Length: 236
Image 1 (tube, rainbow, N blue to C red):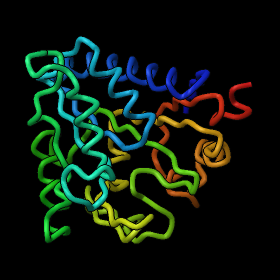
Image 2 (image 1 turned 120 degrees about the vertical axis):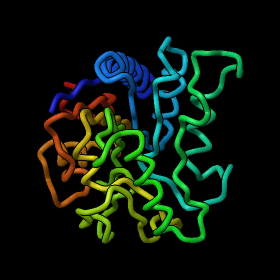
Image 3 (image 1 turned 90 degrees about the vertical axis):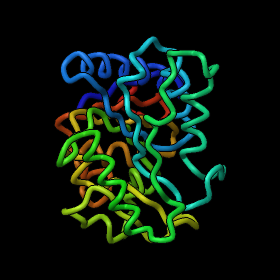
Image 4 (image 1 turned 60 degrees about the horizontal axis):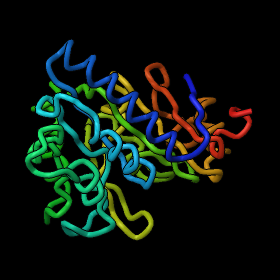
């Protein structure tokens, strides 16, 4: 699994945006569209703001969520709140930004979360085939080895027959998350890892340590973009 290192979080995020531009351009040329799943976190919002400035065929791009906290619309805990702000920060007349209807929100406000997860899986199938094959999935890495909302000890780690599931409580919130089957089916996986607290888990993930959730993600089509703080000895 290729690892590219950069001086700091901002340069890492901007390089990741350039990588996404290349992947999107190739996908649109080959298949007519680009479907990307995005995780949350501070550094990804830098990446998405940089991406929003790029000259892309936004009308051919769909953005889906890797995971989302169960919280009301507009809540600052929601990944969707920051995703929309990052990708739709231009004038509504600016044709370089993605049409709002092509940002597909996880329906975490539903009173029936299990039915909502099935509904979101249907959305994925409608835009990315059945079973859905996403062009690119962006993932982060937690200090405890979690990725998406696949957290240590949660039953969703063992799901093999669904693309979307609802977790138990983690850091005070239940979550909706993509599961391993759809993540490992993706054409490309982009890891964006920043911060010195990630050094140990990044090393374990790269070794394929399947005792941590991130270690169970397929490495064949994955690339890591990391800052020097997270890369540790890899950056030497």
